[in-house]
Length: 362
Image 1 (cartoon, one colour):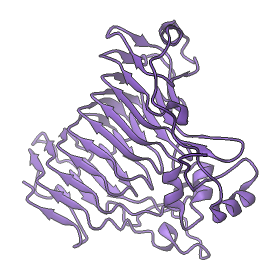
Image 2 (cartoon, helix red, strand yellow):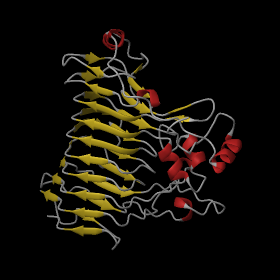
Image 3 (tube, helix red, strand yellow):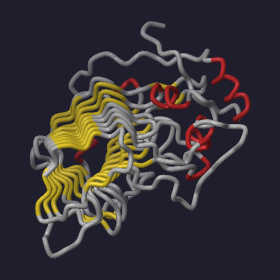
Image 4 (cartoon, rainbow, N blue to C red):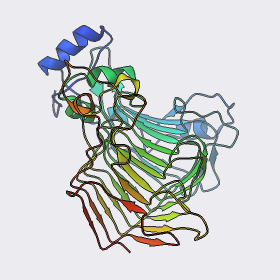
């Protein structure tokens, strides 16, 4: 096999054999697919035909260019290496409808890795999605749909979980000029291990009970550049950096983030999953936070927001690593610089660790 990767995660053979195979490091990943070609007419017909609110996703493994007037009333899925290199240009078209059934298990758009019966993970990479209005939510998933998925939990019981999660997750994804309209669910979620995603020139609006953007544990090297965040949340911050490292969050505008702007923390065992990677070496620079001066908001930027204060800590003496060993957030070596806050108060940037560089914020 050409261009293989040297990590695998879990199979359908049961957890103990899966763990032993993990330890051996002997299972390989397939290489990414070839550059995508334009979709045939049949794919466009499938996308555009009327569908009920529970219709299954249309699998995309070829380049798609939509008409600006299109409204796609069913989910889209980019699954496995066969979707690598695909470009979706909506040209202003809309993905999802207000009455379409959505949830974290049934997102409007999903980019996901697939695990074969032989245990190998087929990983999508080099995908671009641009110029779309997305009503509902978009998720990128590798080992599982969230940090509590069984595959993620089992992998977390090993010291090299971070590398394994990243090897199995989507990578090098470009999300450009998107308009996310939240309908109660989290509009954009980067799952465990997702790396090298660029979110640029996009807008986040609507309402959610969660955050606008979530970077989950073991994800890394993502770029959140030049976006506008204006989602109305019930109690959460706009961006959660949960055990995610080496990200750049720059040039974004946060409007009325009264429940918080950007929080860095690490879950300490929710769902029995050990979080390994602390939120370190992130750069938060040149962002603008705009508040109504009459409302006292939560912090715009909060380093070490939880620091072990949790009701779901998981600790195992025989697993002395990650959050099992130390439940603190360990948000260190981050740079918070040249951010501007208007209408707020001087305590809106919080830092409790001297290793973080917090300078020239106004």
